[in-house]
Image 1 (cartoon, rainbow, N blue to C red):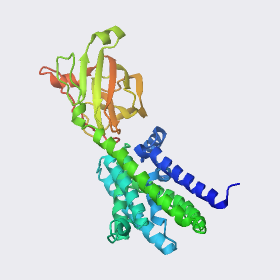
Image 2 (cartoon, rainbow, N blue to C red):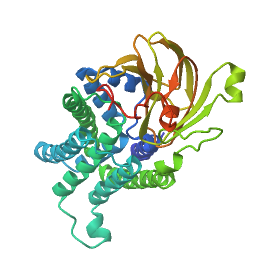
Image 3 (cartoon, rainbow, N blue to C red):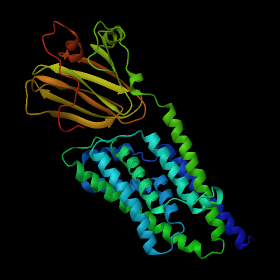
Image 4 (spheres, rainbow, N blue to C red):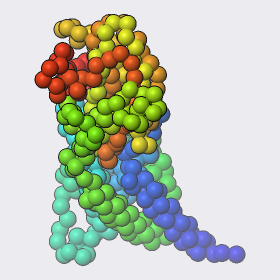
Length: 394
């Protein structure tokens, strides 16, 4: 039979190991959202935003590790409320402000700093400033607020990866943030119950050292993993596709038309078009159809699902009217559309990933390609600029 001390010690090591494993398993995707979550938030609804915020915080191990470090040695309700409120205010300010104003930062860099924040709070818990650096530690309240601001940027970068609607943008952001706080409170309640039980043990001091050194190790590894991602991500300018087999220039970056290629003719398609969307960027591609004309299409990415809106806009319209035929997040789509009005018909794609995505688009029908129209001096129609022209898309 194991002694109580030995059993308690082994459980402490096991708990610390599981905590590290949890952090590392989520390191590269600390703020990630599933495709189901993306579709849910695209469809709207403040309760869904709130639910996503709560579940997002409960799966955000880096944020929870930081909160765990904050409350580790706090015993009074007043102190716990003060410090947790400071962190809450910090990340709420930047989450709301950055998202509302579309301020986007490289999330590898942000997550790397968040990893260091976990190291910092644990280092402060073991009195590392005095013990190892022989200096007085910085004011803890001010540091928690400052680090909370950084955590808010991390939450904002992932929230902005979704195609948010401008009609109720602020309310949706606030709902998401309320969900974040509810999730944080739920996790905090569980942490406090566990900590209260641990403090009654004479092995709490040993456990505290194991837990905080584990947090330092996990935060350091999170920092290294995110910096690896940051250093290996290329700038968007490197992902503009070159034009191959085309006699005219594309109308926008990343579009490489291959008109009437042998491959397209052999498969029965009129055109095969390659469109590369840089990391954290978006693109539109449009055809001009006369009323009653039919466009058949099939497109697929190189494996990454993208949010898209397949829509049409009447020629000469100045009211901002558009008709959306399909809106989803998919790796591929195919079908046909018969124009109920003369105008542009095509896709908006949004790439929210840290890597470029290439789309292979095949089409046939009675249409004009706007990228070729714009490049041609004798074109009968003036090509519509490749830009977002309606309110459903950010």
